[in-house]
Image (cartoon, rainbow, N blue to C red; front, side, top):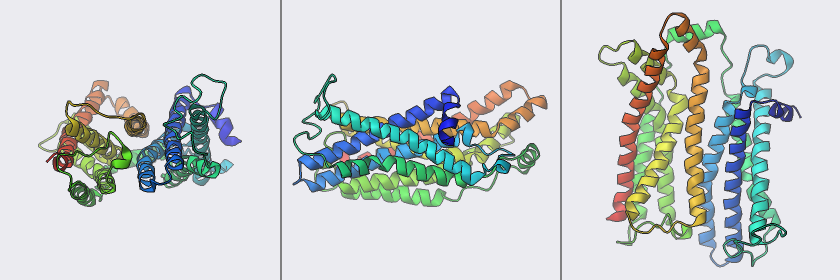
Length: 388
């Protein structure tokens, strides 16, 4: 009940972000139900059904990541001094955030169920009744227990991930502690860069090995998902995990590079902020890098020829691209909220606002200069064995 009251009293922008989470949950739920409909109408093609279900895990993971990022930026779940005295400590706040996330994602799952049943023709009285009956396997009965289990995946996974992420979040520092932290400088470098590089290389090797055997036949990712080799999916997953692990380390290195060769005040500020925010924004940047490299690899495979994108494949691609990009923007917003006190202190000390804007632009340029070539290189290495 408290979570619902907090939801009613939140800012419209916060509600908009929660609606976006609900929309992403609806998209993933619809994909899962389509997979169930395919399995029900094609009982002899169990391998294709399992592979379709595995591909649904990619947008599911992107949606869960987005839901956690939205929960972290929710002002209602942010630790503040004095809340523990009224029983709203870190554990209680994490539970409230998990309940709010579960409400949003459950709403999306219910919308997905209604839309799926409507397009199958099971619900009548509205336009487009049974408009996609053949695509959604309307000729076979839909197992209700299996459908509800699949629809519960996104709410349960999002709620658990949100509770874990917010419970481990450090308490809000006071103004004195914030000043002390600013004087102490950024924390140590993230330790996941070597493992991230190793996993990325291993993923590219697995993709190259799994794509052998059919020269001249490109990887049919944009077409029928059930024709995709499972090894290629495993390789891309390893590559994505590796880039996500390497992202914080690369972001930290960007901050160090900005401070080399006798930096001025703007470069010094930009570098210190990047080093301090490496763990917060580095992982979402790595995930976006992995997704964009997959898109570039698919574009390199098909060139300017016809692209047999199916409607479900297009929906999955939009979900992954949209959720990963929204997660990056939300993480950047969280980082901005975390350094509000530092920015206010600099302005009170006489720092011009143009210097802060220049530091922001310099950080964005440094990240683009490092991650854009990396994305292109990973895409070319992933597409090379498939086009050879």
